[in-house]
Image (cartoon, rainbow, N blue to C red; front, side, top):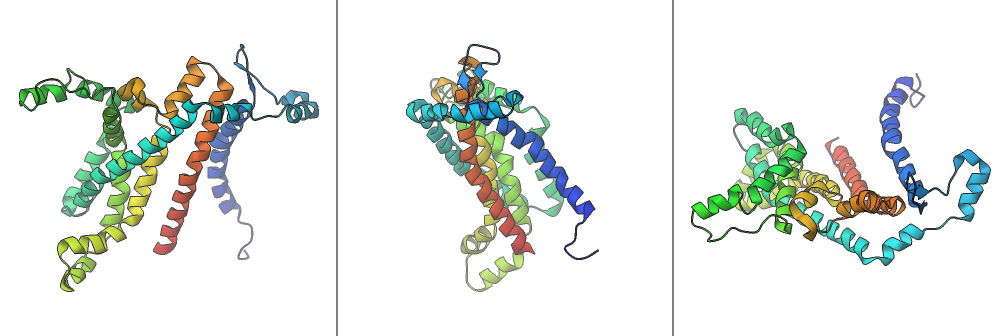
Length: 303
């Protein structure tokens, strides 16, 4: 076969992920986008579509004649929505910083542990995935509550005189997010540090660097791809997080995932809820594209 010619096997292999993407992302996104351009109504489903494909070209012409971005304009006019977006981005950014501060030492310790201990340490990191995500979040309610285990231990140790109010505060949200998404930060950093050539550290120390200087000048720059990957893997899902702020943050924590839930299931305003979802996806496209470019650069550098 000619170089650069059509390869049926290669085409079939590529078609599988693209078909999966079309079925589970592009088609649902098109449906949500269609609903976001509709009008709310007291019906089942609770919206009046402006695009009626069953009417053929007449339905398409009617859609363009009645086309407007009323629901998206409403998002820009109501303070609740843009405050929720900003709050979600800020909470996600702060969570990334906290997760990195906790996860980097763990990954560094794993990478420098004896080789026979590394599989065990890896298993301990991924062990939480063996249980339900919802059960793990509910467990923190029993730990952080006023009568929870944390307050009982602190009272028993004499460190506090009265129970601390942690549950239903932003602190509880950050604790839940860091605990839940910590493996997504640890594993990419560990994968990068494990491949680190320790001869470079010895060479740096031979040239007069202390161990701390060698760490900052050699280890940290070489682990940057894992750090960037971990930051994106934490930031992207946290922006749209709903379960953790709902169960641990209560009504005091404003995140766009909670607003989206309320619009869909409490207000039953599907067009506005769909507009919220579309804007959220557009916000997430930026870090997703940056993450893909970073992964591509890393692959090219390894080749």
